[in-house]
Amino acid sequence: MGKTYEHIDGRLRTFIEEQPLFFTATAPLSGDGTVNLSPKGLRGSFAVLDELTVAYLDFAGSNAETIAHLRENGRITLMWCAFQGPPNIVRVHGRGEPVFRDDPRFPELLAHFPGIDPTPHGLRAVIVVHAELVRDTCGYAVPFMAYEQDRDLHEKRFAREDDDSLGRYFEKKEHVATSLDGLPGLPLPLPPSTV
Image (cartoon, rainbow, N blue to C red; front, side):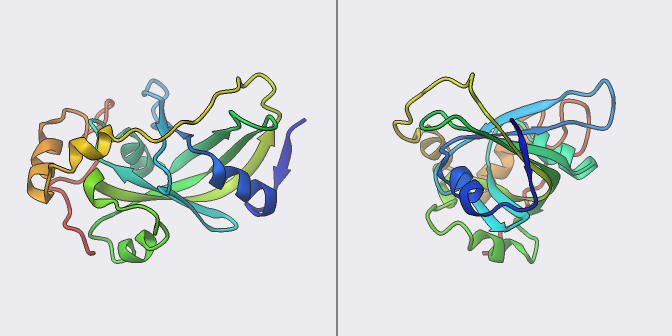
């Protein structure tokens, strides 16, 4: 039932770009470390950069597990499910890296997200993922669910912050600079934006 693809293009690209929700999974190298699974949404915050590279915007939050795991070992899996239409699940297994706001590549990467204003969301990084394995499976057991709209709570919460106050917010959170397992997370003080 499953199929492996050499590239993210055509029907596969259209499918993942149309989904309002995807999931990221990462883990530390330690066998007893904490596996992390995160939902990602917000229309316009995901982009296919080329046939083997995708990226998404990493916004303010109370943890930085994905960033910490990527800094340690780079392993990541992204997954999309069809909650409407024909059943389908797509996974991109690969290597990722957080590109922080002070990185010279940051402005060019940010240009791939023209439909979203990242400012009110407390943008921390752009996560870039290079696909090593792309597969789809049937998704027959995934339920039908209807997408209504994006929540506006994240934007309302973090629109109140400027770089200084956002940095202070991150410094107060136990698992932003350091992961649950003690790995380096988001660099603090918050790197200044290059845009």
